[in-house]
Length: 156
Image (cartoon, rainbow, N blue to C red; front, side):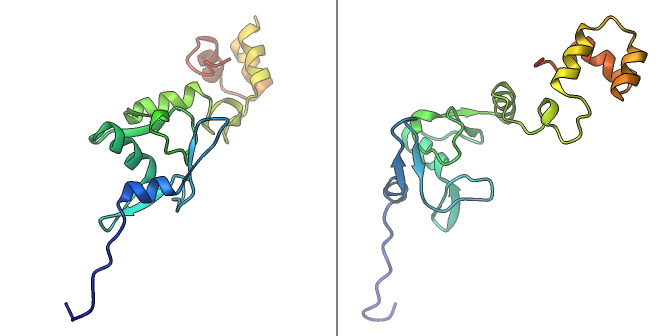
């Protein structure tokens, strides 16, 4: 190293992370104000790699999560409050998303849905033949049958 040139000493990642977190008094979230990824989650550089801010926060307090996901109880992607975070699998994440009705593919909000919640309620309560309902709602008989048997549209 040339004389008089010193390597820049970086502040510890947790100091940097928590300096970029602002407490939100109503929810208890600690909102990360640094860089975000394309899904809206905070990210921070450490040892030459980019890491999710909420993972760094969780693991600093609770230890390694292994290869599992760090999930938000508060459903706020920018939250780095370790008390709002929990370890789960991808399946846990999907179940949590469905229970909280956060999926854009849920019910009538699904981009390819031909039916509305109101139509499904009518199908479930109707005594008409499946063939007739299928024609009336522009759906297949299989779709009508699956709704009636509770295989689809379970939230209604």
